Image 1: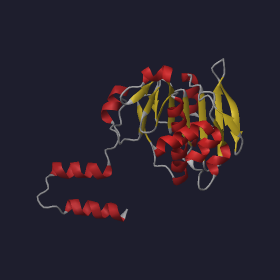
Image 2: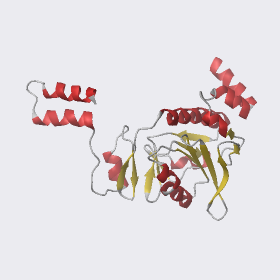
Image 3: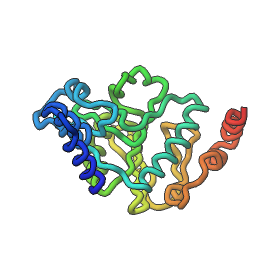
Image 4: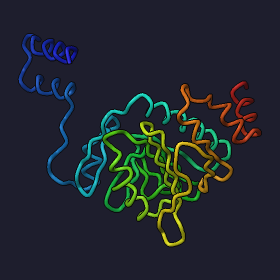
Length: 239
């Protein structure tokens, strides 16, 4: 807060600063508040930029709060391990925030998206136009209700085959797979256990890895999941 006050005072003390210039400099520091009116998704994309962490839900803008240290660490761990696995197996692509997934009535920014090769045509410049093949949400205190409530039903109705909910505070992970009737069924839930992904053939995750401090090394983790893949990655990094 003191740093913000100092920055504001520095701006206000600039000689010959016009009202328009002052308004622009304050906007850069404080950030432009989201519009109050409802807007189409196209208007939302025009309003937001690459640094805007927000979601579009039925015409309304929902701003995302900053995440905690453990949230960030788990996200980086999963991005590395899942990302390396997907790349070397040539399964498709992963995307991370602030990249969005556009569904019929919302555009969400999951912590990790996986799009299989057969669905890469859905990838646009700024968003995924349709459901991903795997979505990962890492729970923050303010997002718990959305991740287990609104988003759960949105992702289920959109037909996303696999949904992971990782809760660092409770040290609890929930893995859901879509059944033949289009409903999510729990595949694994709790603080420990081994989850085998359906969307990433050959990939499995030891839930206890997520709560380790520090988190496991990415290469050693891949060596457990797929020893041959880890060796290929090691050779590629050394070449």
